[in-house]
Length: 384
Image (cartoon, rainbow, N blue to C red; front, side, top):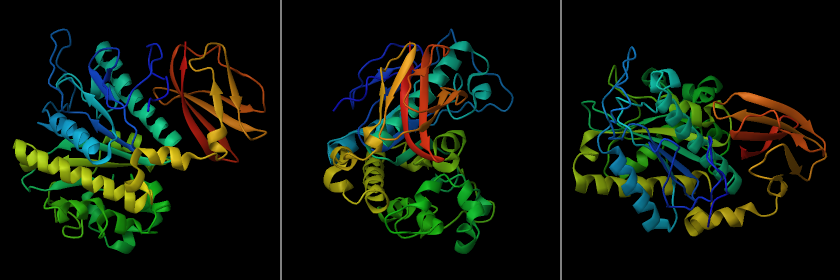
């Protein structure tokens, strides 16, 4: 199953094959396309320290690499394939963190270096591309930002963009609308197969943390460890989890996974943890997202897509040059175009006419189609 012939940021369009690596324009960002509704981002696992890219010297910069997170991600890819015959989407920063921090805004991430800025755009464009593909195939999915922490307590920390203090609140407080609005699993709270509450999804019996605990890997939040106590160290979820999760809208939820030293540094333990995390993610998707997930896996994309009105929407040509044609089972759609920085560059109400994109610069764009303020579809576009 090949992905759409789409790509980003100045490269010509190409067919991407699940499980086969491709690289951004700098060569410092690796994208392994997938066909499952999962995106795994590895922002701090890189080794490369090229001499033509100076060390970042920005105020407050963090330079420590998250040891063995790249290796962990590659083991997870293998475990997904062994379990499902399919692949998650995986994006890896190959540069050392002292050159590029892919979990920060561009100012801190690149420290003004143009090569790193290009790698930054590659990194996030690949994530956006994966999310567009997942929404087209499955309608919804899960973004996971994979990290390593050096905190004293040896447990996996799951970040939902809620602080330690917020997690220390009662279930009824966590279920208030104000906290759900801040959550990186906001879309899942609004629609999940068991109609579970926010608190249940964070630390209930079928939460991701509890699934890891049940497989022998301590995790917080979970039923066994519902929140960090007092002032215990805890990572709540950073830039990537905020940018790429449903906290900011859409149907891709996000969780930051902070892995402790004990599950990363020893190779046999790392392999066992990768297997347990993969099984937990699959169970999480089955319980909360897709009833037939474990009986179909990547085949679910075909079986669930059907011939819904959304799936009859067609944007062409792609790549495009001057005009974009749209076919849809609607008389009118609102069309919004964003560049790879997330900036809106064009908005138009479509009523059957060709869409003039001649003023757009060459590059990668995200098109959002909506009707009566409800998002119908998101699609990627290459402008020559």
